[in-house]
Amino acid sequence: MDEIDLSNSQRLTITTLINEYQATGEPVNARALADETDRNAGTVRNQMRTLTSIGLAEGIAGPKGGYEPTDAAYQILGRQQLDDTETVTLASEYDRVDATVDEIDFTNVHHPDLCRAQLHFQQSVRDLEEGDPIVVGPSPVSSLVVLGKITAIEETNNVVIVDVEELQAPLRDDPSPSS
Image (cartoon, rainbow, N blue to C red; front, side):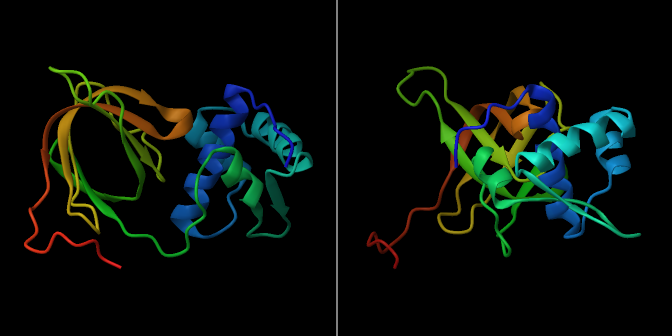
């Protein structure tokens, strides 16, 4: 697929479409997208026409219609289209929620005093705020738990930047890799 250059507004709309579609498994109407992105439904419909024409969304007609993301939409955002995902417990402000973390990137492990991580979520990170304490984990395979404080939020990419205060992972008796 040729490289598509999206505006921030288009990227936010496609990200929101994927988030809502994954949450419900049903087409997402323009009004729902407008509510989530704080825009007018007519503006969203116009934008969705463009996104549909470039192959990032598919329009579904009918009373329960709306829009569905295409495989290309997942690819352009660098996200995986997963039917059966493992959720990781997320505790923000000590309220537990189920969220799917696509990836955890430690961005500066070489730094002697600071450990920072980028947490890539499948769901919207809109309700999180900078300064909130956050606990993510345990992860399904390695039982990794990341504890820290949110320092930045990238809503259009569903990414949270965390100053890591503590990492927990159990030591295993059998150090051999699992198959």
